[in-house]
Image (cartoon, rainbow, N blue to C red; front, side, top):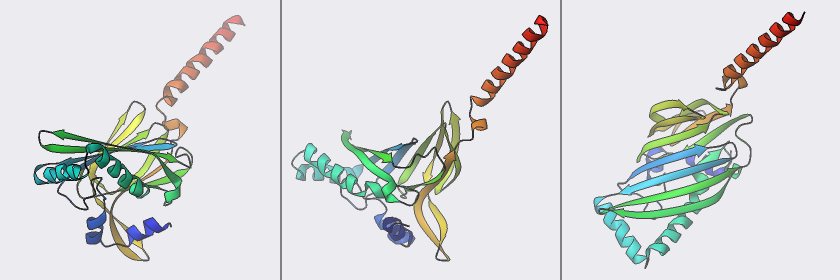
Length: 235
């Protein structure tokens, strides 16, 4: 198991809450609301994180932007911070080297006194997720009020932990899991351990569970019956 994962797993819950998420503003803790959207593909993962600051916390963001001379400088610093911890936000198969951050983008918007910080991270995945079995570890946080995970049609979800109030919807070409970030429990060196994280275990979807399989099977059956009937009439 790689160093980053080992360090996170042995930190008590209270300490983990103090460091679970490095904010793009550079503030370690703030009364903010997070949402994230994780779009998983066979060879890539795209993450969109939205931080909403209101009241006094919005004033802090406004002051930090002013201290950075201009918004562009603030955004560059935020993107640098995100790039630094991006590999600890998504971990595939317990190996941070399985992902490479290809793009980081931050946008800051002031709406009626509230600040929205939208961050986009794009990862390349070394081992295709639609072959074999894999685990996808996603950093959690008590402030993540909404978490959405998208899986494509050719990747099947075997299990998911570390998300509460979850709902699973099968759409046209995708599976969507929504819920709220929560702790998960696992054994480490024979002792129960807790962490704020979501872990999704996936595998290649069996061909017979694909939505197109039954219609294709029916079409083949109709074709074979038609050929049999034509051959019989010719006899």
